Image (cartoon, rainbow, N blue to C red; front, side, top):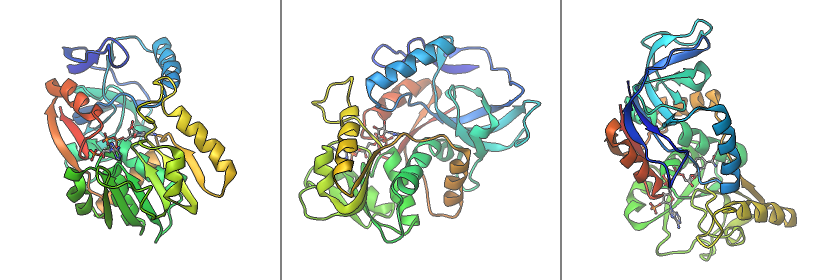
Length: 325
Ligand SMILES: NC(=O)c1ccc[n+]([C@@H]2O[C@H](COP(=O)([O-])OP(=O)(O)OC[C@H]3O[C@@H](n4cnc5c(N)ncnc54)[C@H](OP(=O)(O)O)[C@@H]3O)[C@@H](O)[C@H]2O)c1
């Protein structure tokens, strides 16, 4: 089968390429998915020290080369003898390392039935961004109906889900993005938009009950000025300012959040999303109820996957980028 494979762990050494490899065997406790669409981003910009430790773990456990790919949608081709949730032919979506291939074998609790009202391409972009947005707003942010939420990076992968989920929860939503994306963010339901190239939301005197931050563009102290006295900051993207050292990038912000949390009533959290089948189903329910529609701005073929990954990693994607297999 065809797959996108790379011999090294991550950028800048990685050279993902299309190769012919063996089709995976389905293990007893896994299901084999015929992939129809997938995404390929391989690392959140978590601090390099944490990535380094994770990388050692991956190297010890996994033979290289690795097949890339994180999330997908497709059809069940075969089921392991210890599985019970799916049948051959079922249309599913979910996450699975190695999804940038014609087939991938994954544990069944990484999948759910595909939303009936979406294409495979739309479904494939949902899992990670969907449950990151959901967990950031609902669990870390404890968003309440009527609450005022500021979503920084509202036009991106996580942000386009977050705007719609926050609206579905009954919040008053303000989205932050650059000029070309203002209309997109309005069109998915934001009540207000702020163009970060024209206006600094930490200086305009408005305050929010919850800030969900995907950009990491300003310091935690600056963000605090835009929070109500008992508001919550949830840091999803932790890249930190351009001046921070790459090995501690993001860690500094998490550390200052920890310290500053002690000083007042504001709650300042870093977050790492948890892979959860229940949350995948919760997001699917919102989609089928018409409250949430993924924004897909670019389509690539499997052979173009390296270009798609580069596009997604630039940090200015409108919604999501998908690869059709
Ligand atoms: N913690 C977790 O578990 C977790 C999970 C998923 C993702 N992440 C991280 O979260 C971040 C966002 O992911 P994503 O998939 O949404 O990325 P993305 O699709 O690249 O979106 C990034 C967004 O940030 C906006 N942006 C860029 N610079 C900005 C600035 N200075 N001020 C305000 N907004 C700015 C962009 O808007 P414009 O294009 O308009 O500039 C874009 O909307 C990434 O760092 C990712 O690694 C973390």
